[in-house]
Every structure is written in C-alpha cells, then in structure tokens.
Length: 222
Ligand SMILES: Cc1cc2nc3c(=O)[nH]c(=O)nc-3n(C[C@H](O)[C@H](O)[C@H](O)COP(=O)(O)O)c2cc1C
Image (cartoon, protein in one colour):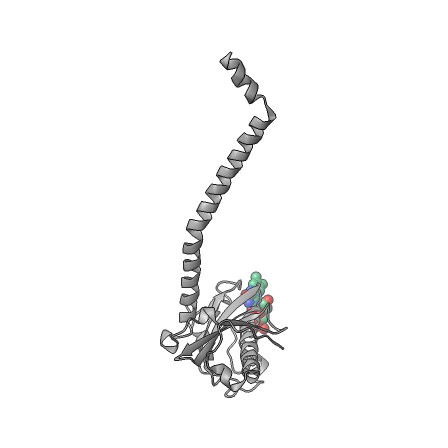
C-alpha cells in the first residue's frame, strides 16, 4: 500500500516540477554565494594591478588622493577607443595626470600609460600591452630597452609638432631597424595623448584644478 503511494506521487507532474525547481534553486544559491565571496577579492586584485601600472609612470609621492576614482574619458579619432585620464592630487591640488590610451600598432592594438605634469611635461611612459613582433619591435618594452624613456621630460613645448615623429620621418625619436611602424605608432599615440591633455586643460575653469567633485564627467572630442 505504501509502495503504491510512493510510486503514485513520483509519477505526478508536480513532483518532477518540484524536483527541477529545487535543483535550480540550489544551483542559483551556489552561484550567488560563489559570486559574493569572490567578487571583492577579484576587485581588489584589479585595483592592485591598476595601481602597480600607475606606479610605473607616476611616483606615489605625487598624490594623496585615489586617482583611480577620479577619471574621465577623452576622445580622439586618432586613437583606438577613449583615452582615460586619471587625476592625481596632493592636498587637493592637481599634481599630475595619468592617461591610459590605445593606439594601432603593426600587429594590433597597443595600450600605453603615461603620466603628465600640469605643465604638460611627460613624467614617464610605459607600454602596458602590445602585439608587436618579439625580437623585432618589442624594444618598446622597458624591460627590453630604454627607448621608451626617451619621452621623459618631453612636452608639446620642448618638442615641435614636426619633432613628434620618428627620425626617419623628420622627427626626434629613434625608430628600430626594419621596424619603423611600431615606434611611429607609439610616438603618434603619445603625441595625441598630450594634445588631448592640453585641450582638456584649456577647457577647464581655473578652479577646476582644485578638487571639488568626485568622478567629474568631462568629455573632450578632437
Ligand atoms: C613577419 C613580420 C613581422 C613584422 N613585425 C613588425 C612589427 O612588429 N613592427 C614593425 O614596425 N614592423 C614589423 N615588420 C616590418 C614591417 O612590415 C615594415 O616593413 C617595417 O615596419 C618598415 O620599417 P622600415 O621602414 O624601417 O623598413 C614585420 C615584418 C614581417 C615580415
């Protein structure tokens, strides 16, 4: 009699629906719990990575704010996607800016990070990622050569517009033997970044260099 009753309810459609529903609820619960426990560590890891990247071009004694939380996007048709400007402040005053931008190289998109002083001088530049040919064009990496440090201290004032090119094109910066396209792209990307920064600065009211607003939404198109 009992076994007959069990067989009966197992054959009912509601029993299968309940079983399926319970399994789905259990899986959802596991996914939600997993996400809740891992999302913060992942976020912390990403922030640490970004700060390490920033430290390559912007010494930490330049700022006492969180430049990663004061960002804005600048747009240039010569770049791949928007450039991200990060504002570094000391005692509320703008002390430097870091800019992350992407430019097209020989093998694909290259990501560049650079830091700029308020007077427009470059504090440092590094290639974050690239798809250029190893052994031929990877001298853009700081680990492979000091070529990227040739931009230190350069600005739109101490290098003429014509100078912002590789020597082969009449500019100031070295190219690599048999690989001119990569350094040409890097020089152009950095030049565009400086022009965007200059344009952004011109559009700022004088008081904007003093911190009043978190995450300002400013867009500059060139
Ligand atoms: C397999 C292969 C990979 C190359 N990779 C690069 C590269 O990563 N960057 C680059 O500028 N040129 C690269 N080149 C060379 C370019 O096609 C081009 O010839 C060169 O950049 C022009 O430089 P030049 O004016 O000094 O000759 C590569 C060529 C070949 C055949």
